[in-house]
Length: 434
Image: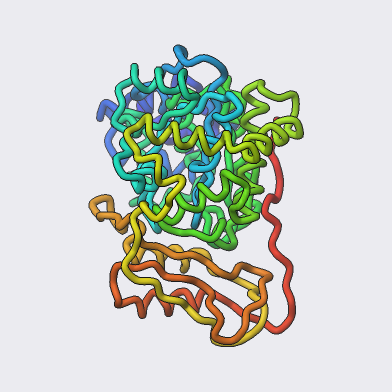
């Protein structure tokens, strides 16, 4: 086989075989195929797309390019959750202990964030002493004992995807459904889960800005997951405004604590119960999502979910007393209120600008080398559909610097206020189950 022939074949819209795609990924990973040929191949995919079979072959080849995590020593069906990302997306902090509390093993491999806030690990490291440096034996033992543990991502997980993603970023081929779907699913599959629940975001604060694109991505990922033998389903949820109220690492931990006892923001509460119900059902702990939801509501009300969160934190070195006294979490020096310039109803919140404002405070990373300030962030007081008076607070800024003029401007520009009452946007648009 020659790479130039395979580029031409895909350029002309023909389907590649499993052997041909394996040849490409193995050659690229071993540096036998140069970047310029892989760039041409990516552009051919960008314009011609890929069939369902090709997407499965590509994902499987990327999985096998590096480490594949073996979770077979963990009892039960392991179900993972993946979100395509957004602003204030605190779901993992709630879902992991919530689902574990009903007996579903959560063996989570997470990364650090690059963007407006930290990733799951950054947020958890707001808890003093918490760490994710576990060897495989400790990881398996903790999941079997407590039904929950989190470790950092393996350095050699899907190296082909890492190399290809970097190339796509500089060749204008990021926005390709087959390449996005294969990239996401290769990491989830390599992480060892038996089943996968996907939360595909759509709206201004999401990667997929419109519902059609989000639907295409969800369908593609579900097809890939099922195609490699992992039970996979997806929901498409709203990210036209930030999820919940808190944006920032320690602030999101506090919001997760509130949500685990049923006192969190209504949208975060509902989304976690929906995603969690599918996780519990795929794990075989409930016959349907209604039964699963009742199980999750029960462990919230009884306090068991919060106790599991405490056990999880302390088992990985964290000071679990922050659960009862969240003031022990990192706290910013200054609080500044962002005031509404007029009275009316909130008609729009540009989520991307809110995310940028949080990043400017230090809640996220502009580059991989940036240092996160775990204490800073934003807490929204008003969401779409809410009424606000003139000079009433829209957002509380938590900052370690007095200079927040640019942040205030971004937030005020992000909020649109009108005279007529508007409806709250739908939280969940559709479910993709096959």
